[in-house]
Image 1 (cartoon, rainbow, N blue to C red):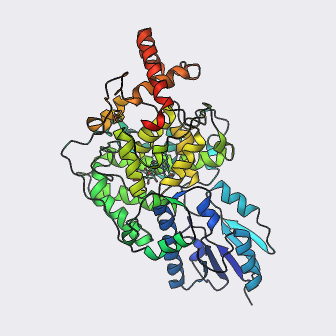
Image 2 (cartoon, rainbow, N blue to C red):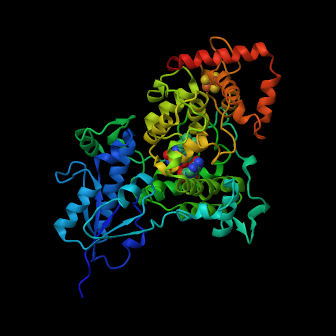
Image 3 (cartoon, rainbow, N blue to C red):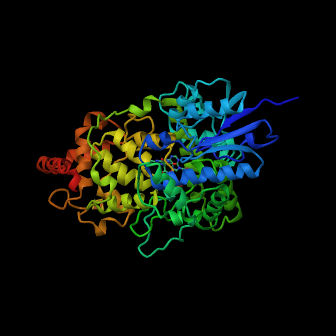
Length: 511
Ligand code: FAD
Ligand code: SF4
């Protein structure tokens, strides 16, 4: 009996060698992977992100060949590359007489649409990526008929369903959430372990990218590319995290400092998002390490980490599929301002923003609180158009893929969704940034001044935000304290603060 010849597409973020596709007899299948220009042009990406994707795809190609799979790899410089999914796929179907085309369901709405609309000469079928704890629509089913989609309830259901950190039906150690034990400032002379960096010479891929004239942002030393680009390295990074960093992960999860760009965070988001490793593997390995070293690793470190992956990561994916495509155009606060120029250079006198942005340009990475409470907080206070904020976040981080970027940016950070993800806007004045960081001490601006030439812009913009949006938020029970403080201020001070904020908004590019 002859087998049908089947062509299978692997997207750049579907590098999951454990997928059932790659088990069993491979004689019917040919895999296709392609580096196409449109995927590098829908937003201007960080150069490390383009290099990271292309090099990981090329490594995956080699791994498949080593497994005995037949692969058609269409590189960016390939003369037959038509830089279009439809054209490249149909070309292969014609050339090789395939009888069927298969793909794994993409995680991005945009790609989902492109693939659904392919007009091919053969039968098409799809399957799951087998990567997440949840299916695409599981969150929508869990919250059916409910008004509020609370992450906390979802997380508890996930813990129970997948029996992670559970004691039967009860949470381990009697509580679901140990967040209050986390979140300290980093002590002044504290030195975290050095980050585990890899060393790849990607200069020839970099040359191909330049020749193809793909636009990019950020810096790279392409002779010494430091991100993991295959499964083995991703597992090594996970191992490094388990052995050296989880012990203090929660404690310093929100801490910020100009001295270290990487402290106790896992930096596994890129590996997980392109599916080199599975979230199960990450969660299970950390729980295993906790069981091996219960005297070294406090439980709150582990619970805090599991919450990020089993909770937030899956929750964001569920929100994405529940609310796209509408989510991508939400602008609840009607913010229309332009993103300040210095978001692209880091050239601002505000030390917190300067460090967070320059670090992002240099490493294509910033941790969650830098993204949420420094860059995101500023953009929100300054009333920047969420489209522009999205473009920035989708471009600059190596881990930025729309399903997890847009839900964090428009939802959690910019409140553009009107409260689907967050119950109140994540905003703060200088007080929070100073509490969690060592930025303010060396800043041109003064953290405790509300008005005047050197007043910290975060503070007046914070009050300006609350003032201009009071109709929307004054009755929010989680914000009554903030409004009570504002209402207690004397009217002259209120007026000066608003005038200060407006002055800053009018000269935002010079701050
Ligand atoms: P750790 O702090 O070590 O956390 C471990 C893992 O938990 C991460 O690798 C990630 O997979 C998961 N995680 C933690 N927080 C979140 C979250 N809020 N949502 C989803 N997963 C989470 N994450 C991305 O993967 N891609 C993005 O494009 C992205 N954009 C963001 C934009 C904004 C404005 C904000 C506030 C957050 C964004 N995040 C994004 C979430 C989070 O900041 C990153 O996942 C995290 O910083 C990645 O670094 P890490 O691996 O060292 O994470
Ligand atoms: Fe940022 Fe204000 Fe602190 Fe300067 S003083 S680092 S601008 S919070």
